Each structure stands twice: as C-alpha cells, then as structure tokens.
Length: 206
Image 1: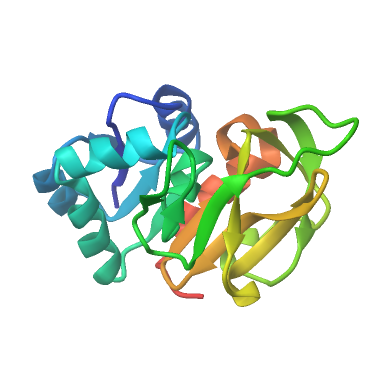
Image 2: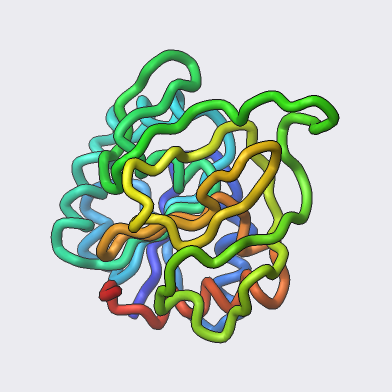
C-alpha cells in the first residue's frame, strides 16, 4: 500500500506528508499521470485559488488522471482546497469546472456580522451520516479550518460532517470511494491523525 500525495507546487504538501509518515504509512509525491500506477490511495492537498489549481491540473493532464483513478474505485481524499476541487463547479476567480467527483459547487462563505473571514481556527463538527473513516472519532470534536469558500453539496446523502460558521456547511463529504475534508486533518491533532489513518486503511467502500 502506498499513498500518493498530489504535488502541483501549492498547498500543505509537507505537513500532509509528515502526518502520513507519523502514522507509519509510505507515501510518494504525484506530479505526473504515470505516477498513478505506483499508488493505491491518493490525497489531494491544497491551499489557494480554485481556478488556479484547476488550470494547473489541466495543464499537467492530472485532472483526467485523477478521474481515471477514481473510476477504478481507488480511494481519494481531498483536503481543504483539495476537497473543493472535487466539486462540479467553483466560483472563485470566475466560474470554473472542477473535477466533478462529488456533486456540488463551491461558493464564498456568507458574510455575517461579527464573524471574520477567512474562517480560521478550531470549530466543531456534527455527524450527519456514518462512514468508515469516522471509526474511533466522536461526534462534535473540533478540527482546524482555514478557508473563505465552502462546498455546497447537491445531495445531503454525500455529507458526512457539518460545521457552522455563520451558516451550516459540509466539512466532510463522500461519494463512493472519494472523500473530502474542508478542515486540515494533518493540523487537527489526535482526531485528525485518526482520520488520516482510517483513510489509509480504507478500501474505498462505504
């Protein structure tokens, strides 16, 4: 078993790699389509712009490679921007097509009096649906967030965890073998590391 960590030169690649290593798993950077044959699991980390990231994926022919990897039933985890890229569409920087792996769109968090944007810091999560990745993780535990945009899921059945920050938004989503976390599990201490460990053990079945 080897975890591939998508590397397009942006995001929290180092901290995700270190977190995976701390849990005892082997990983490798994924920078080209031919790297996918060497991995069993894929993590899409990311911090930054939806449009920039999708343009970079297309330029490197990685968008098609990711969709093909998903079509084979192999596990994929998107973190923060990586979760947002799983959507059908993102509005940051103008309407841009996403990977289309989980039905939904990505839009700005609604501005609410008294709440600062971006949403930075610890916030709790409400379990909406059960999932194998939640094994050993209680409901209403805190995770660490850094984001100004949120994922609007088309179907509630795809939401695993939900968080409130002026509005309720999905903080963990799933569709078959593809899962996304809006928070940073690699920065969320014991519970976040447990989620990463569960992902590495996961075969992609709900």
